[in-house]
Length: 363
Image (cartoon, rainbow, N blue to C red):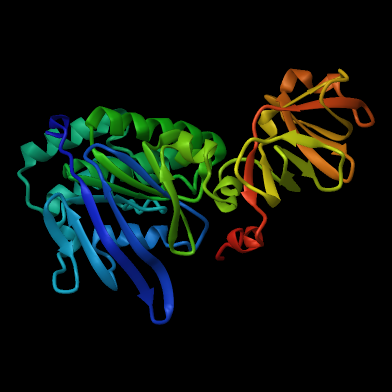
């Protein structure tokens, strides 16, 4: 049964994928561990779905090897078809059969495998309970909400007790509130079953909320891998800092333990090893704004009330800072107010002209 916690690892060795002269993925080399929730994150066209499809067996690598547990499933000489890999996959589209009720949709993989009726009934009932759809077993897809249809697709992938679950942007067709609730449902199912999950998304919030590790990919190359906290707090380059969360990049010059921000008289204390022209990455939630006189002096130019937060723009000399404050602070600051800013944290990169190149994304 599923509750026995079938798990699996995935080992990817120097996998490259090209379509003709178009290089999609370059030298992907990593192991996804038993029971791990891994997210492949990146902009459209970066290669994340291609990697997922190669694990599933829908695409062949141009070079390199893929193992599921200790079994070689893809290489120059070996190719195991998808149905032999013990993999469950959930696609962006629900892909549920409109002429079948929920029970029959979920039972389909077992039916075509000619599993006996009693076993089918037991397994389907169990997996419908896991995804909270037991009471909808006799309903048809057109009688279900989008979130319920996506849970049907998830149940169908789980019912055959796959060693590995692959999810390709499964929430992108749902509205914002459903997406948020489904994130936690999928994570809870994964945690309870102990199953290994490889999840593809371009939504950084999904990646942050659900993952044990995130692989952030741009133009076929892994830019950074690590826990959500690691890559958010310690982004290795400007692309990573920009893709995960909100950030402003400010030009400056680093020398004598300070950074002089270009266009202002602001001097930031700096004990790092960068010298000369730099880019300073500042996240708006790391700025505290007050009406005191200590700190960086500026003028509020705009404020936006977002309910749980307030989003401000503050002019300091020739540059603008974005400041995220609590929603209940909105009435305290108005355009034209003189304010003081304090930076609790910032990240410094060499200003070597790479920022513009890094931030290019494929469409």
